[in-house]
Image 1 (cartoon, rainbow, N blue to C red):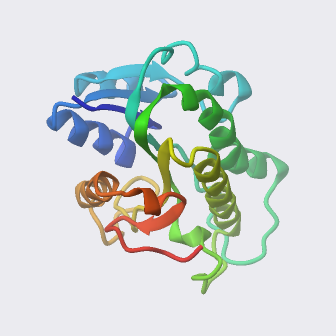
Image 2 (cartoon, rainbow, N blue to C red; image 1 turned 90 degrees about the horizontal axis):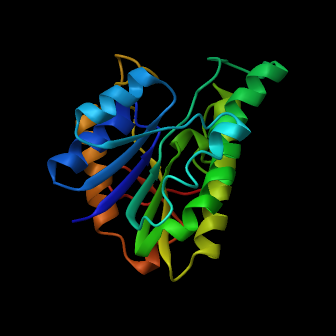
Length: 222
């Protein structure tokens, strides 16, 4: 039976990861910031851990509850978008800190804690975005979010180098998904996005370590 950790599992893509892995009888641990989110995780038969990735104290939360665990799959899903800017509109210090702390600093705080909890040849994925790709960029809307996901891609690449031979680390573009963040006009339902990413994760090989994938397994340029 596989063991899975989903960080940021209270709703949307994260909760769907929990649902699908539980449907396959995996042992799943999911994190959420509040009791409402924790309740949704528990309702799917998963273990629920409180975790607020946006704060230093909150991000130190996973260390002792996962001591002794060996996760086959880890997905860092927690993230925020920030303002829907359409140009070079300077974000406030508060907004910059929220987006960068949640999308980037949290991963830099959490990944070192998770190293000892990885099973051999574990799969580790961060939920990035094609908006973070510099090579594929053709617009500048949401530039704070874009910057945060480009930085997250860098963090993932460094983790893949540090854990080479121990884990296969990848970044995902989940697609434009109908969630609270993606909105109702998005072209992909959450079930399809997560199902695609799970299949891609299951098929990863050592050569894929440090890669950036579309949800369907198509390789993306950084």
